[in-house]
Length: 269
Image 1 (cartoon, helix red, strand yellow):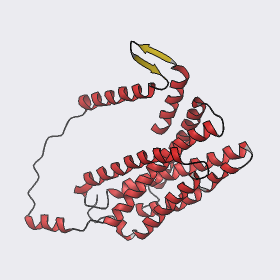
Image 2 (cartoon, helix red, strand yellow):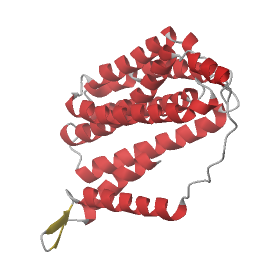
Image 3 (cartoon, one colour):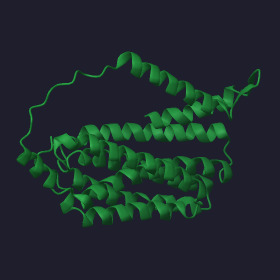
Image 4 (tube, one colour):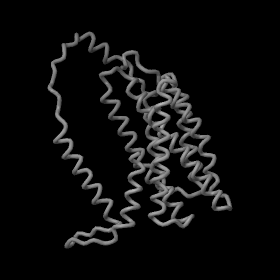
């Protein structure tokens, strides 16, 4: 739901903050997002310092050298981990590129203002966030296999790209409805792909390796969001649907090839 708050704040900033000067500091619709994020991160740093405390170090029983050697020789599932991290990264690419795409199409194709594009994007992300939350509740006890979830979401992701080709429709209303539906579906699938990927990443290795897998998962998602911002800015209205379909299709092929390597570890918690 945080993805919906950002565009909503951007719309409010564009609507209410026009031009405010404090000596040589300028606060307007262009610089306000930077000031807001700087204040937000400063508040976050203060909260971490005040409310969080490192737990006391506990002495762990020494592990026999033979056990250490045995654990070190345990094979890391390279193919399965790469497929998992790729699914997480693609989720970030789809989410960010879709955000940029909505703004570009809204302003240059449909003639929306900045506030209009941001508010519509906020509504879209809010609906997708609610759908992902409800789906997580429903599938927790139904779908027991995270790797099957990655494959299934990839298949549905390819199908979900079909309405995006409605951007070529002549009627504006039909165009908006089809593209809106397609964007909602691919974002919904991206949220599920990210969830299954993050859950599976911590199960590919023993419980003691969770910190490493979490770090690599976060890196994959962050790099995906960064690349998605660039990709969304260069894609045209004609190539966006093909690109999204290609990403989901490659994720499906990658996960299918590495399916056996994505099996959870016996010692994973």
